[in-house]
Image 1 (spheres, one colour):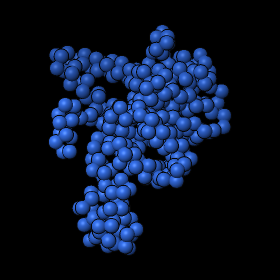
Image 2 (tube, rainbow, N blue to C red):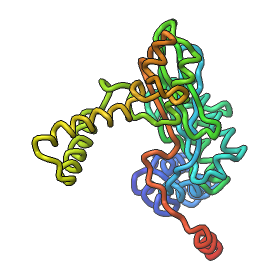
Image 3 (tube, one colour):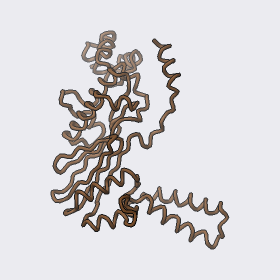
Image 4 (cartoon, rainbow, N blue to C red):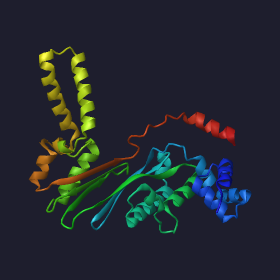
Length: 293
């Protein structure tokens, strides 16, 4: 087994991860030069250099098989790569592998085997080495419904937004599709007011209080004004309270009731949400790359 000193030296030489360096040394009898060559041949060295890159593009996908559904975000650094055949094929392989493995964590997802026999992590590393751009799985969730429950789902045609709903028995799949499409467009933060994160609510309420005070509202009316603004805000961020985009005279809740449907779980993934996107000067980046060659 490779000792820590050799692993450290190999990592300094190649920037490879601990486990990759350990495996390379074990495969090559603790020979540093052969291990480094092995890492290069596997594309791990090139991929390691991209490990710190920020990947904010990619796809959000849904795969449903029986009572199980997977929502997953798979990233690339640019939209150009996200639309390439190689990335699309990889994302399909990953989606199938993660659901089949019934992964419970990102670590389990990365260890899931694709149809080629490679793990998800190895497949991402291999593509990163081939295209010179970081690719990988950012997040996923596998949901299991009961036999009589219904999935509602929608993936926008650019594969950037995916919405999955779990609905009670007897719910309309058509209504589920409409509600999921609405959620994709309107981006509600929560399903209903009882699902609102209380820490988030307290922070937002405090902001509204400060704004009301700054507006110079009378102290005896400020509290009532804040309550009204909080109520309006909650109606804007909760899916069931939002006006249905196809018929604004009804809330989503009313539309679902008209269709004898009830949502019990809501998941929405949008590619890159929550990640700060780096602004890149394309001409400068090209010039820098030319200077390195």
